[in-house]
Length: 118
Image (cartoon, rainbow, N blue to C red; front, side, top):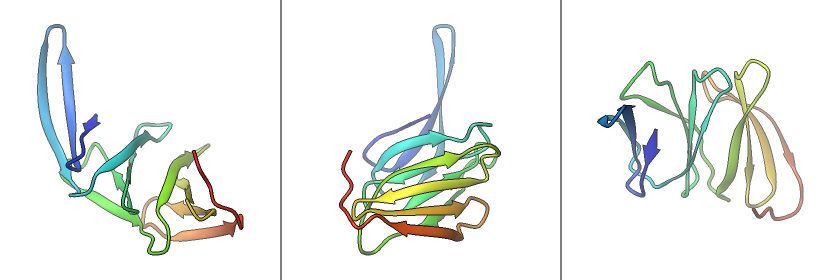
């Protein structure tokens, strides 16, 4: 899987010296990172502008906006294991949140009261 600054997620199927490019989804925002769940059932698409999307490779063409922020941009997101049904995110303002992947409900949050940097 690959994404450029245009917000389009592509799948490169490589076999030997041949390859095929497949369009997956267009979220129309620059994607800063891609993170697979441990069982490869979900792919988190973290954008530079704030929203985090969930993409199921088995449902090509559909990405679900899991979470969005108004006050601060998401710095990072990753899956919680075991199970891979939840993800954790952190914003630049220091808010850590736990999300349920199926419907994007925020289950818990904690404010670290400090700015976070990578």
